[in-house]
Amino acid sequence: MARGRRPGAGPRPRLISLRTTFAVSFAAVTAAVTILVGILSYSSAARLVRVDQQSVFTQVVSDVRDEVRQHEMVPEDFSSSRPGHDLVRPARTDVQVLGARGEIVDHGSPVLPVTARDRAVSGARRAGRLVEHKDVRVGEDLFRVATVSLGHGKGAVQVAQEFSDTEDLLRALQQRTLILMSAVVVAAGLFGWWLARRITRRLVVLTSAAEDVARTRRLGIEVPVTGLDEVGRLGRAFDRMLGRLAQSEEDQRRLVQDAGHELRTPLTSLRTNISLLRRIDELPPDSREELVADLSQEARELTDLVNELVDLAAGQSDSEPPQQVDLADIAEDVMGLAKRRTGREIVLRASGDTRTEGRPGMLQRALSNLVENAAKFDRGGKEPIEIALTGPARPGTVRVEVLDRGPGIAEGDLIRIFDRFYRAADARSLPGSGLGLSIVREVAMAHGGAPFAYRREGGGAVIGFSVGGGTTGDGSG
Image (cartoon, rainbow, N blue to C red; front, side, top):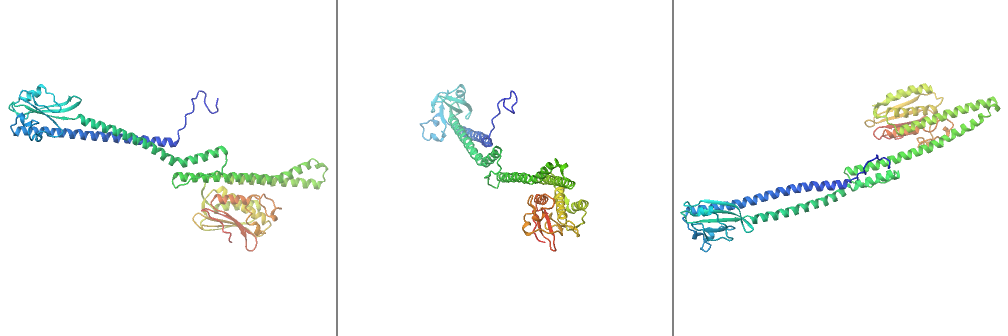
């Protein structure tokens, strides 16, 4: 049984592509609109034609009735052989003349049927009496027939109009309308398919790129998507996301490699000292004390290194939500903690608005690292360590500086002190892992700023960072 399938479950339904869905939907909407418009157009046209034909026939009959009422007329007046008969035989009509007893005096073309009602009208005394017949079939054609009496029992005249040819015309119009609608639907389907391909082509590229990433786990795949619409924005966002994921993966790989390299030294020393513990009874008392002190120091350094690695990893994936913070309040907390740990005097100078948007835990970690770094390199110093907060150069931007009077930083080390595990030559004898300032850099960049360091006039160093609005340290004093 396949994994992830329930027992007795049917085959997995085949997925329908967005392109097909779009094309079918476009064709369906077009077909519905075309059919509706075609039906309404045909109905309107057929109604207008039928009404027009009916009005023409009604007008012809009315004219004949007026003619026989106003003039005393006989059947010969409507004879097809009589000169001027076209004046009483309208175009597109068939006229047949009946005698007094209803006999056909002058037949029409074709010959029209004569009913008992028509014969009765032929012998009527009053002129203009009317009898109408609808749907009279003559051969294969249908006619409307009206019989008008001539009066005084002289006979009648029959006027007929063929409407089967009109229906034939309407049927031809209906067939052409259906053909046209079918052509429009097919054209709409083809155009919808072309338009769907054009619209979804970049989405297909994005889908292929996502599938390639899922299949190969390679985050360096280029996403060739252009355009200023939503699809273009999605493509650029997807490309940036892949870039950041690739950078994050590279950072993690480097962190693991650097951490492994740095952990080897204290672990090797620990293993060496542990092997000496097996012969501790053979060592003189001074060597025993030195061995225990060395073990204790290595354990502390290893603990500090692990803690800073954890802090660095937490800084890269901190889920603490941003909020409005006041760096002056954070600096007060850092000062209290640093005084208890180091016993050094620490002063705070703040100017301007020191509020910004940020993660307080990360900012406190970064500032604490700067103060502890200053205390470590200014060991035994008489002057207080200074924390200077300046803001804002732009709304929401704050500059943080920690100033000491230690030995300062060599010019060649200024651009490298924020690298992971980097330690200047004159600092390798001091405790530490070289990760504290790297954490400061990560925090600053996570807050839209950058770290900076420069030599302090009169001796010492100034190390700090800026936060908010993409602010960067200029490196000036």
